[in-house]
Length: 276
Figure (tube, rainbow, N blue to C red):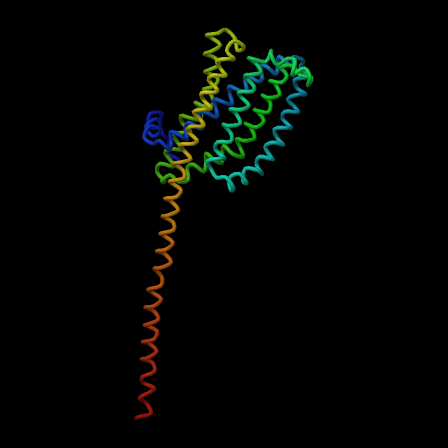
């Protein structure tokens, strides 16, 4: 059972362990990034499709694409873990969010010079931003179940029993709520300062960039720690297996000697009986 930690105790656990801090950074960064991107994207989506019917039609296609992408990523996730390991799997989600985030905010902020080029493809900068944001949200939602959640749960494995329980409890108490509400708090703060979400968009893009870079740094650091701890656990298991395989040989040899002695004592009376 997970221990119930207070906010103060949870903060102590996070401060005491660099490993748990890096893992907490992953959880908080994912929650804030998804919130920042999704709210900004939906505001541009409503601007592109003001009609309720068009908006509903697009969201229906979006849900279908998300389901297909999630199923595909669930199949590919296992292959990624087997071939490339935990570190690559942990860095795929923030890397894709970084690339698509740069494209999404660039089209919103600097899309006017690209208008002639996009017009040849039958798109406007706003429509292109909506499509790039849709790809970003589709991948982020599908990657949560196929890559992010498995990476997070696997990261607890090398920890000892006490730190594993306390670290998981601390992340549940502090980081999960902070990740879910942090993005909304940042948006509300910027709206109060700049007056609207549209005016806050450049600053949201900068904050997203900082958060995703911190996410990548924490993933790299956690990968090094995860690999070293996993190697130590593997060495311990191998040493235990050697001890367990070597230990039963001594009793077997001792029982063989006892069996031979017992056979000798049983045969001795029969050998002496003909002499009588």
